[in-house]
Each structure stands twice: as structure tokens, then as C-alpha cells.
Image (cartoon, rainbow, N blue to C red; front, side, top):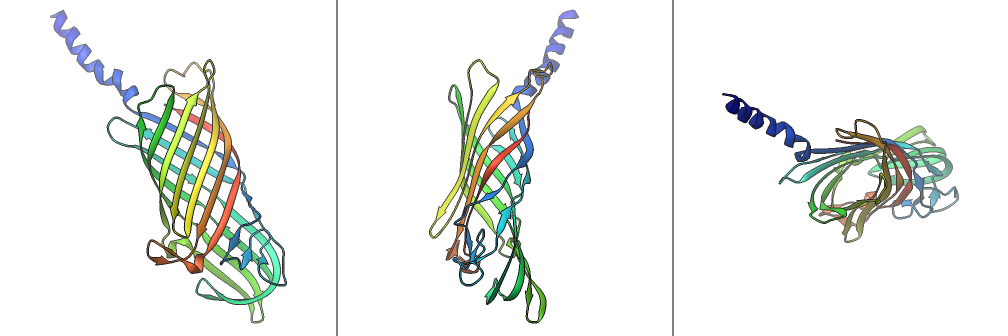
Length: 271
């Protein structure tokens, strides 16, 4: 009788003993800075994001990047591809003053005075990846679908009174498929993990690239056998160049060359 009870106990214990290694969850959240490259432009060079020129093209929008929230989670399991979801806030704002008359994003844009503008490059990523079975380092390869969920907007003075332009990316809609690679490894004899990832799409006149490098440290807590909690910090750079056609769609009205980069820091979790 006892041997049957022992056998039954072992059978019931197997799923619980193997559940932890079979499914792995990593996550992070924090705050990042957004610095704009001085060469960043809109509408094929009509507007200079960081400049303050008011007399001729490129007209300066005098924008600066706001600090923003980011959050991500990665779920790994056997056979099926790993899934990583990431959200990042990336909002650029500025105030300027100039005189300009043109059609912008299908709307009349007649400016004669103060201009308050916003370029929201916030995005949501969903990546499907497979890891390579290598010692010492973890390498993941896959695809990343990026949904641009912001857009361009401006409030300005004109001869007919106060006006505005609103051009959300959702009007396209703008979903960008990219190749994805990440590399990670732990420094021997330390609790520090170094990692980097790259998502990129070169496509004719248009291209998108986004990379980051970071260090993650997990605190030596008594709960580390079950879950780890720590800090992550790093640097990332995002570039988006849109011109001509993209996947057969005319995107000339959205011609953009923007580079945003900065440091980030947050909390990290591993289960």
C-alpha cells in the first residue's frame, strides 16, 4: 500500500517540479530620457525639429524630448516562440514663431504667429523569437511588429484665428515589421547581466532602426530561488526615416527623418 502511495505522490509532484523551468517570465519598467538629434526633420526638410529658424525653410519647431515611461515583458516556454511585448513613450514638444502657408498632411497649414507642436513617436512592440542553444550567452532571433500609436499635432495662430492640425499615425495605420536580434550574458562571479537588442527594417527609401544596451543587476534576496528583483539601466537609440512609398502606400506626406536617443533606468523582474 505504501509503495502505491509513494508512486502516486511522485506522479503528482512532477508537474510542480517542472513548471518553473518550463515557463520563464522577465519584465521591466522605468523612466527614460528622449534627446532629439539636431538633423531631425519633418516633411522632407520643411520643418527642423530642434531649430528655431523663422524666416525660411527649414522652419524651426524648437522641440525637445520629454522623459517618458517604458515597460516590457517576455514570456518563454518550450517549442513555441518566446513572446516579448514592450511599450515606450516618446513625445517631442516645442514652441516657435514663424509665417508659413502650405498643405500639411492633407490639411491647410497657414501660420502667422506662435506655433505649439507635438510629435508623438510612442510605440508598442510585439516580438516572436527563438533562442539559439549556445553556452555562456543567450542569442534570440525573430521578428518584431511595431505599432506607431502617436502622430503629429500642432496649434498655431493664423490670419483667420487660432487653428490646429492633427495627423495621428492611426490614419495610415502604421505597423512596421522588423527583424529582431538580442544578445545577453552574465559577467562571471557577479550578479550583473549585460544585454543588447536590435530591431531594424531597411526598405527602399524608408528605414527604421532601434537598439539598446543595458546592464541588469538582481538583488541577493532570500526569494531568488523563486523570483528575482533588481535594477536595469542602459542607453537606447531610435531612428525612423519615412519617404516615398512604404509597402505600396504613398507616405510622402509623412516624410520624416527623426533620431531620438537617451538613457533609461528602471526595475527588473525574473521568474
